Length: 413
Image (cartoon, rainbow, N blue to C red; front, top):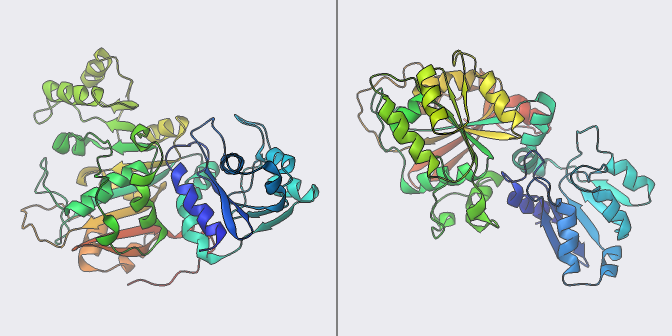
């Protein structure tokens, strides 16, 4: 594995914890060996390059840096923000060569040119082999910077018949235990999670990441791409117990199947779970109940326009949002322009549920019938299909996002 590929794997440590900064990784090489590693810390903390330099200084004299090469996934910053410019440290320690995985699209960053003018040998590693690494570690930052919205990742599970639930207002187990493990690990890779009203009614979700660190996932799944490497490394990430994504709830209105008592029970459950939680509602009574609990809540006219919710999450600094939606809101998020990734877990088992949750869902139908050209017609591309024991995990990505990284795609029907 090349040193720049190892730098991208180092950046996995930063995903979901450093927003609104990009998830960057760095390694420092001397005589063919890595002598330092680093990744971006939480917002306001050190950047990947500085962490890698500090790692070297723990074991070596600083003079070794003047004979080493820095591999970093993103162009080093050259401006003062929460921390000094990384280019200052590179020049201070006289690092003679820097290999960059991806140019920074921010107008504030001119690290490449600054280092070149100072005499540093700077190269951009141009290779299609890195497109998935760039997409998963830097894509959310690029997208958020250009669109002023977070990148949305929509996730659900469905049965072999293409069903999501036993019926309206009910819930049932769909996936195998390993798929459930991966779903919980997926929560760790976003700094924000959004849940829709129907899911709250049927599941009363905690939205925390509950995964079994002892499970040996590598023996139970097919490792085919960088995405799966990210999920399998979650339990090895530093300070993992401290990382709790912010939770955003689109509350259902008070009605027969969602009473005042149900809402209070749900709020008490969320209060017992550490971490940031924000509530949205279209119901004045729900709004008053949430405020009585001294919890942040925003009263909206309706959920027809989901932009106010997404705008709020963007202002909070999240680069990527994991959306956990039930059938009622699914089409709305599939069609939403800022939903860029869709991940579907398909069970191999038919449940024989008496429900019509597949009826108006193009994705559920296309996956069940394996007609992926229908999905391509609305701008998504099937990037990979991964075996999780008897289950299947489908990854769909917006075609224009892939084009941004100049990837020549191979058809996967």
